[in-house]
Length: 184
Image 1 (tube, rainbow, N blue to C red):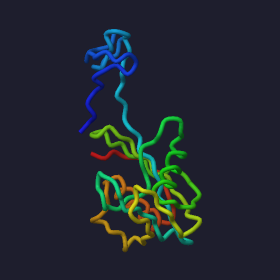
Image 2: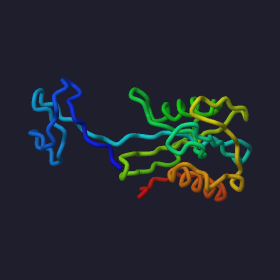
Image 3: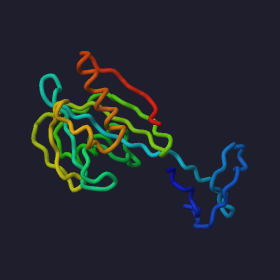
């Protein structure tokens, strides 16, 4: 499931060699024999929000995906972080792009390591300022759900399901924590 290593140097285009670098590194890396650049394959970061509505945050905004993977399934607004932005800025951008929601971003809520696919998922809590949405091209529909209305069998990703389950558990407990865990 992990991405294949680089085949050509991003600096000069020469075919890379998979070997231990000469700098004492202990992992096999893609190394350019021409310019000696070491190419590191690092995890991708997915950032998003848990946007909620209502005095007690009883409604959560979900987006129905208009892109693969998992076209037509429900998700929280999220996507890959871009270079030059913080995790909060990326989560805000994704919420704007996918839901067209007006909101106030809060604290980090979940941090999930998904090592088998080389990803890190970070979700922030967010308070919606309006119940009107203007979804972008990646979203078929954006809609508010209470816990009992969520189409649990139609959730796109396990990280989203785990985040939603923790959100509603914390809501019932009357306080929100920070949840960091691994997804096998």
